[in-house]
Length: 202
Picture 1 (cartoon, rainbow, N blue to C red):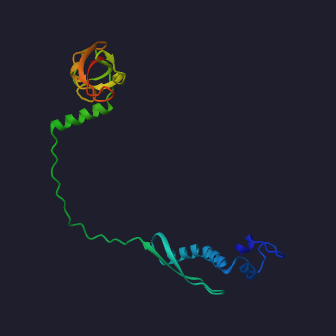
Picture 2: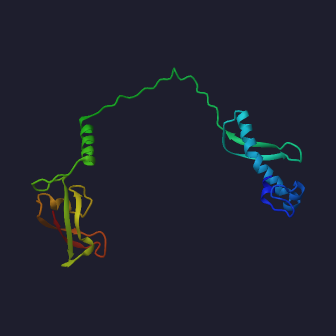
Picture 3: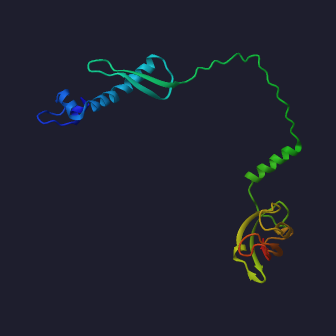
């Protein structure tokens, strides 16, 4: 019927052409393919439901019988959800070693929380190890400025060693608005490996 609605044959209204003429027009293979595609999904679902099969994934289907006037027969192979039976575990026991919490471990965790969630506030004193500071950097090699070593508004934790070598030692004791010069070997850029005079302003 679906094919009859789709195919126009001279002398017949849509959906009214005889099955034999349709089969001659499109071929028996196309008719059988349409039949299988229309019938299989619902029949497969019915079979799975009636057999109480907990199917996983798509089935592999093989048509075993398809003839005029006869029932369509097929076999379907599909993975099923395994049935798991838990053994009696009421007699099982687990030994857990006691946890020892030291004062040092507590302080370490508190410090980590302060660093993650704390709010930075300005202080009126010289820089100390562990402070977070905002700095401007500039550098010269043989009296010439090094553009790639120039930066403004960098946030830095004193003592972390994450920026230029010698920076942490140079800023300790410096107050906001003050500058300090120190020498350091550049590790990147056109002047890599050369000693530079670095100026840091807190």
